Image (cartoon, rainbow, N blue to C red; front, side, top):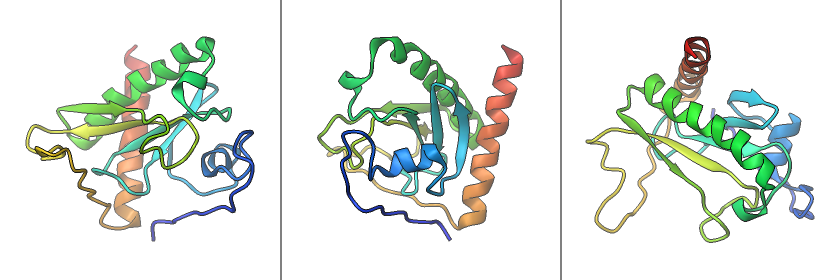
Length: 159
């Protein structure tokens, strides 16, 4: 079963009540694929396509403009690694990256979406309606996470 976590809303200005902060602390379940001092990446529980990863900075930052300039580079080094690993792990031809700031931002904690892409995936239609394609089951979710972790390890070893 894919877990759906809801925390009571609190003061999200400092991360209290933030589900992503709970994942960073280890207080909420997530299928983590990358754990680094600059951030943590985990599978989206409502993926656009299997392999859809969310990358979050460890500290609570609501939007991209709130991220300290010194932290942009380290976070995007991880995003760069993930775009390669997600595509490789899922048999994708590339990856789509996106950040929502306030509008369409379902969790007020900065997160970078990394979504595997194929030319025939029909992810974008003429009206840009997102079509969610969930995991078949928890085992499928774990398999995709393991493949991404392996691709990240392979990428780190190759330089």
